[in-house]
Length: 385
Image (cartoon, rainbow, N blue to C red; front, side):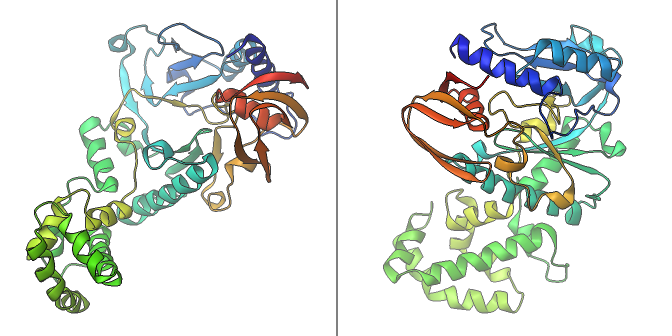
């Protein structure tokens, strides 16, 4: 990143933290501010590991003063509560519990244009909220805080004090549940008298969709799809196709015993690349397990700016999630023109408009220019300051 680009971004971030950007929500602070460790990354830094951490702020005024004077690119605070958050050694901080965080990052789900990645990761967010509320009994109105990360995903903060003392093992059980890790189809689908809810219902849906999807394909593709499953021969695939209709009739009677004991179905359950395994993954919420299990994690501060996009790390009310558009609602900078030099051509929607960026010099809205420069796609080329 050229020095002119660094100064451009620092100037605009400084205006945000200094309260000079009109019509933006005020900066927030986390619960128990004095017990949090803080970490910051800065524009143009070349130090390793590149983060200044082990800082604490007893009051909001001291935190805000630091943000205004230092103009960080990234702002993080600890999910943990510490007696001595500024201690330079983790063992000296004296851990007193931690918020439980789910992280959904589009990078772990798909690759593609930025706006498409944002749309895909919102599907996972809605799925996760549904699982936590319906399966786990968590009240989404009182116990969930939803935050757009400012980058490619969302964070869910669980505010339950009962979970605050959980160690990594307990947190792993919860994230394994929502991710569908370690499922036993035989155990979940065998009893016929259990209520259809949670993963039992999701597995039933995946099995039914798989059988119907196979039948919808041309006959030669059906056999090829099954033969590609590890442990299924062409002869086994052909035999399965003859009994597929009978398997469908059995599940229509709510009897899944034939499916879970069928050798080809068992092979599809075991092969992570099979159509059935993929449909089971579609039922899961693809959260990032290390974030949830880490009891000393630093997480992005809601209401700060993301130094890799210029977008606001945006807290959301549950009722706002459906209509939230990060490329409109998380944008804090203006549509005033600025010149940037892009390293390649691309298309990018922002502030309700779609922009075709050519390689070389482009005049774009300030918000888009900041996004492109923050992501390392472009360098500042002059204009509005």
